Image (cartoon, rainbow, N blue to C red; front, top):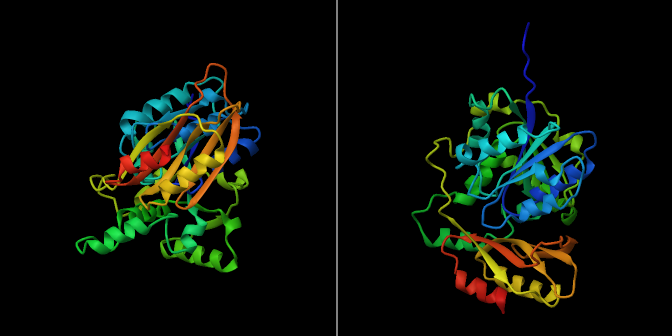
Length: 345
């Protein structure tokens, strides 16, 4: 008599802040038929915005209890403490899940996470189906890895002791180095020349042949993303990164905090305040939800560099506190008081 192990495939979705990971995953949830899915969302901050976006899908193939949030820091640094228990919870679910999606924080390195799949406690239960890197097309076309790099460029120019590659560039390099597929997001905002520039920037960082798929509004055929069957954990040592020394990766170059605000009168008023905050050059990413007076719907707010957007994503639930909470992610030393003042004005 022989015993066979069915290992549940896991897809790791990585990418820099605001690249569009959550939007991509939501599209996968809405367009994957016949598979029962689960999601592990790694937040960098104190408010589970990305998790709430995914929980709000209300889909039978991925019920709310199948969305787990890890909010205690970067998943690649807390993999033993947070990831394994979350995996245990998902694998204990009934009915059994068919596929697990893991959304890393924008600052996470995928390699340490993939290496955890070699651990005896989990290696016979799960496998890495593939690593998907989501990259910001318009930012890359402008020669950047994120929408607003002015503050980082000024820091680097002022300090001659800094290495040529700043920490954000290294994070980008490492995410691309581990990818099996690269999703070029916001491709609808690129003309032909911009698309060529963005692709050239990606290709400059690739040491092997990796397909680049354009995407607008997170729309990619799930068949391209799921079912790759690559068992990446068996090949991860061949994917060389800047941070192969496990002690190299730290997040001292970033700060994150939550701003609680009173209800807003109009979405346009909040948008102006958010624009003022990101206009300081210190804010790399801002996201959250807002309570608009007199409206039964929750307002979702997103800001990546100079791009600010908002829309009503779902009604407030019965018993749910209708509140305005924004997560701000910026450079180390960001003037928190100034940002909070601008958002509260």
